[in-house]
Length: 323
Image 1 (cartoon, rainbow, N blue to C red):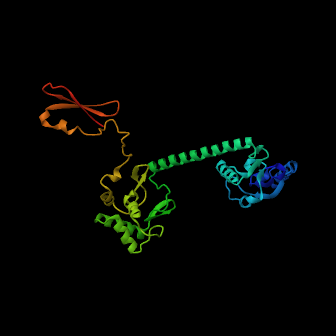
Image 2 (cartoon, rainbow, N blue to C red):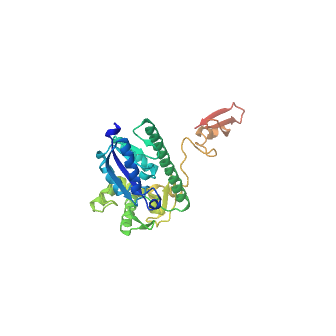
Image 3 (cartoon, one colour):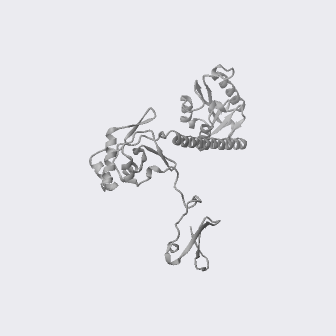
């Protein structure tokens, strides 16, 4: 696009703390941007003025109006980059919208112009920095939630589970729904399948948490969730929670197996087993009395267990491996 044909949208903003600064008033910003358009020969499509609005979010009336009228202008012009955004993630999202619609972005003070090669290079760096910030925030949130789960036993802020509701950050039992949860465990304990339980609840017009019909997966989620026994599951670990239990521990383990609520660490996988925990017992052939042998065990470099048998009569050594 040629500069003399460029239609620009002027965006000016002041927050409460900026209003006291000299040179940051809406009129001062508009005056400098208008002067630049006059020098460059650009046409001013409109001036969008947000007064008393924070740059840390996009909840600004003139900002929203400007993007609703995006077809009226070819480039967005601001005095400084922090006039449009103070959050790098929001800035990256804005640039994505501008690029998708073929619009440019120009910042007067930083000499930033996305219509040039250097401007596009700087824009790419800004977007990568925003991605890094977003990923780091996610990592910190996960670490914080893991610490909270281990130390406090409080819920992790998921939507209201069936049978409970959040009240001041705590899970409180809804007795009408709790009765349905107890019925589900009783029916499953009596031998009914999950499909049959879902059909019976739907036939009785009992709504789910979201008001829909029951299905096998909904019933399964309730039966497998240790929340109803007073526990919380997080990252493969089951720990006591602070919420009131709806069913007893015995009822929950009857539906899920003994020891389900005692697990404190993730289950071992084939890729990792503690060195003091053999993967397999001594092969059955080594336990036969007719062999009259003694057996010893050692661990190979590949992680296998090597069982060595020596006949009491002095027969040659026989080795067996167990993965």
